[in-house]
Length: 260
Image (tube, rainbow, N blue to C red; front, side, top):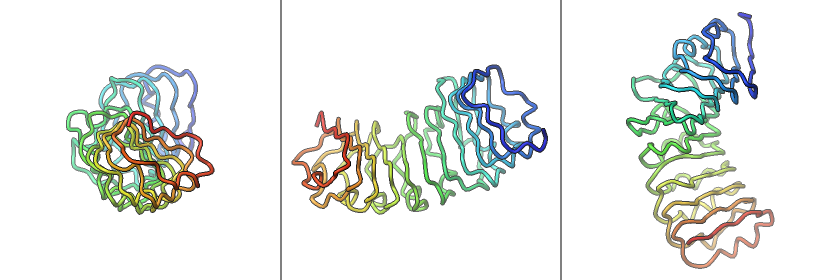
């Protein structure tokens, strides 16, 4: 099986630790072990050997222990990494060593994985990424810091962003017309929502700003989210009247402005 290029064992009931023989599959391009019952640690040497990987999904197992993202440092072909966890005993770190990635990711999912639990740092390797389409860092309550401008400015084709940040929405986010899904809910974000958000992000279909500390007018009179289907603004401190532009949103299915 040394020439195997794709291994998909997802959505089964496999358990136990990952077999070390996986490290021999050096031609492997796609590895999907998600939605199983694997346990134990994710071996850094095992991952380090699979340098042909373009796609890896180990999400929703029962892994424990610490995994270093620098294990992917030499994976020059890597485009998709999904390591979401449902086990509080799994921890992922990106900052213990100084490294520069050789890859350019398109999709990164690191939700619920106790990301950088000790430092709370936003992964610095993201500053080297320029082709991201989807980023999910949600439900990592230990992350701290503002939503970095460079993540938005470097990735103009970003479509989907879930995060765990604080501070204010940076103005640069308002100029990314490619955004389809923007979830900034359940953070510690504050201030007013930039008026340009509802003008520049014209292709938004889902906008979630729930459970923050936003205040001021809900949206400007120039509201231009004509394709929005889901608009969740609940549990903030918004004031004023709703924009008349909402009446032009013929596809709007869910609107929540409760608890403001």
